[in-house]
Image: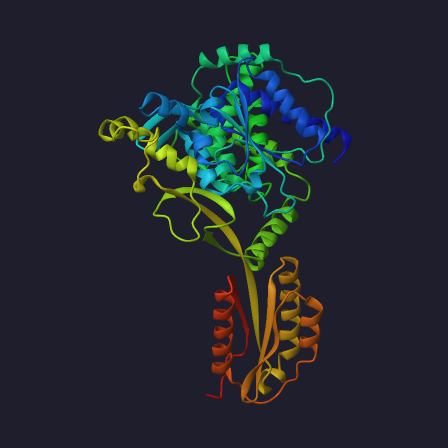
Amino acid sequence: MSAADRSEAWAEALTAGALLAVDADLGGAIVRASANPARDAWLAHLRMVLPADAPMRRIPCHIDDDRLLGGLDLAATLAAGRPISSRGLLSEADGGAAILAMAERCTPGLASRLGAALDLGEVRAERDGFAARHPARIVLVALDEGAEPEECTPAALAERLAFHLNLELLRPDGAPRWTGEDVRDARLRLKTMAPPAEDLVESICVAASAFGVLSTRAALFTLRAARASAALAGRTHVGEEDLALAARLVLAPRARLAPPMEEAGEPPPPGDRSEQESETDTASDAAAERLVEAVRAALPADFLAQLLTARTERRAAARTNGSGAAAKSAQRGRPLGARAANLRSGDRLDLIATLRAAAPWQKLRRGNAPEGAGRVLVKRSDFRIRRFAQRLESTTIFVVDASGSTAAQRLAEAKGAVETLLAEAYVSRARVALIAFRERRPEMLLPPTRSLARAKRCLAALPGGGGTPLAAAIDAAMLLGLSERAKGRTPMLVLLTDGRGNIS
């Protein structure tokens, strides 16, 4: 990327921040970058263009529901003897911005809660014997620090954020173009702007379809961004430059294919239409063609290569991920919150959650309690225990057919395939085991280990020839998998054979 391209990309990134300040219904932005001066400068610019009294809150990826959505104010409830709710981070950020740190590590549960708040403009807390609603009309900024393509913001959340910005290679360049006063005037202008023309909506839909963007949210975000751009520039209607800017910011990062050059400007088929209708359609097609060209110009030169690489890496990551299945634990892992349960050996009491469950009933319980009872009356039904989730280790079990039918044809190819899979398993820190079967029975050449060199030595020395005890090999692999599962690991089986078993 040349210096001029970087300067233009930085200017458009700042404009995207100003558009979010103008219209909060754009949802927010994914900012993909490590902690660098460009990211800090972009966040500082967003803070500057937001209203002076607009709050800005930071959301850690490990936040619990009580702090995110709000819950029972324990101290106030115990003092008043009735349920009193407290506000969460999302409602505290109402009218401003919420910054989600490490969005690439965002769990599906957190993504769904943030998505619901963006959709409804409010948060709903209904638990612990009370229900509360708080306004939460926010702009969400997801800071994505993923180093690999598969490390990214969850799709359910990315779908609801208009702009996907990559600031990794950018540097702050020049003074910001927009100020807080510009944004304030644009907000007032946006309220009085006329509804969009039908041909404008149609051209956006045509351009989105041409680049494989099938989400209706993307088209709506493009329209909203174009209207906010016009308001920010002091115009009362959307111009072509506004539409082109919105398409570059919203559609280009979501593009999934590049349309051929001749597809965008195909003339409408002839028919029995009036001259006025024909001129209208021609103008609409021309607008759509210009919009497609604007998005195409914003795509990187190696767009198709990047798209293919990203798809391949995501599929490979899905196949060879070293992490096993998620399992619940009573002792360690990522907190999952508390649940009602009787205390058993090994459970950990969540004292705060227990007091929170008991607090709403104190006034009633004190009325029936004997004189001299404690200040807080707790019953067995109030007990809450802590829950955790931890990711188990995985063990990849390779079962290789070394019989005569395979040795004569594809044993070398099988060894090459296994070596490739072994390397991928080593990178993902998974344990590997190797079982070969030939002649009368299978043989455990390598018990579960993380040693790649040892696995390769065993594979290189693998002889070939003899019968094919396929059933015995599957049985041995199953027993090893059950043994690994009993040790708290997730077994995965890779079977390489021609399927011609001839020994019972």
